[in-house]
Image (cartoon, rainbow, N blue to C red; front, top):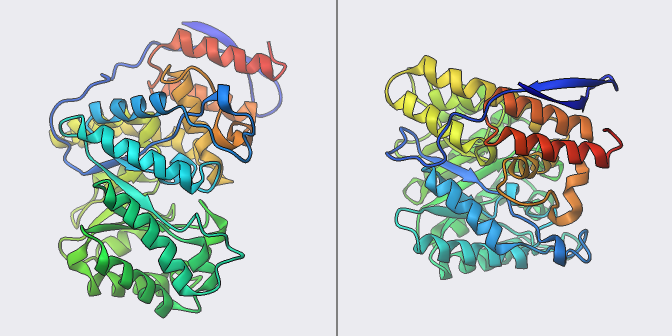
Length: 387
C-alpha cells in the first residue's frame, strides 16, 4: 500500500495508505432490476473560462464522453438537472445546448436513453409576477426538449414557489403543463436541503399536506406521469409516499443518503433511482445491481453501503454544494483532465472535505487508478499549502 499526506478534520496531517484499484468493470452488460437514471455533471473548459462566475464555458467533448461512460454502464441519464449545476453556474442557454447535444448523442448510440430537466431558470425572479409567467417559462423549456426528441422531467421552480399562494396554484400550473406534454413526465420534488429557495413547495411547509397535494396531482393525471423523484433526504417520507402512489406510477429515489435501502426495498415495494450520486459511483452501483438481480441482497449491500458513507459526506450541508465533490471524483478517476467548474464551484468545499472524499472513495473501492488519483490529490493539497 502506498501513502500520501492528507489533512484531517482536527487540522493535523496524516499519512493515508490507499488501497488497490477498483474491482468493478467500467462496462456493463445485461439489464438492471430497477430503472436507474444518473444525473450527470458538466465539464468546464478552463481555456474559455474568462468570467467563470457569470459566463459558463463547457467542454462539450468531455461532457458528452462522460455520458457515454454512464450509458456503457447501463444507466439512463437525467440530463440538465441539479447535478449539472442548473442555476448554480449553468444558465438556461447553456442547459438548452447541453440538452440538444446530449439528445443527438443518444441517437448515435443504440440503447442510450435519457430524460431532460425542464424548469423556469431562464425567468428572473424579479420579473416574474404571475403564474402565467411561470407557465410560459416552463413551456419554453418543454418545447425545446420535445423539439429535439426528449422526454420531460418537470423540475421544481423557484419562481412558482415564490408566487404560488397555496396548493391550488401548484395543481393549476402542473396540470396545464402535464396535459400538453407529448410523453409521460417525471415529477421532481426537490427539498430545501438542495435548494433553500424551494422551502414550502407544493404549498405547505409540512410534509403531510404537501404530500396530499402531490398525490392529488398524480391521481388526476396518472396516465401522463411516469413517476416522481423525491429528494427530501428522509427515507420514511419517501416510503410513505411510495406506498400511496397509483399503480403504474414509479417512485424514483433522489435520496443520496438512503438510496441503498430504498432501492433494495421491502415486502411492500421498492424505489427506482434518479440520483446525482450515481455519477461518481456508477461502476459500483452497476455491480451491486447485478447482485440484487441474482437475489444476493447481502452482496448488494456489501458493495453499496460504503458508497452511502461516501455520499453522506459528499452531500453534507450545505447540500447544494455537492456538485463540487462529484466533479472532484470525476477528476480523480481520470474522466477529465482538470478540476475546474462552471461558476467557479470547485471553491465551494475545502481541502479537508476533498481529502475525506479521497479516503472514502478509496474505501468504497471506487478509484480506477489509485496512483493517478493520489498524484492528483497531492497536487490539490499542494495548492492548499500541504505538501
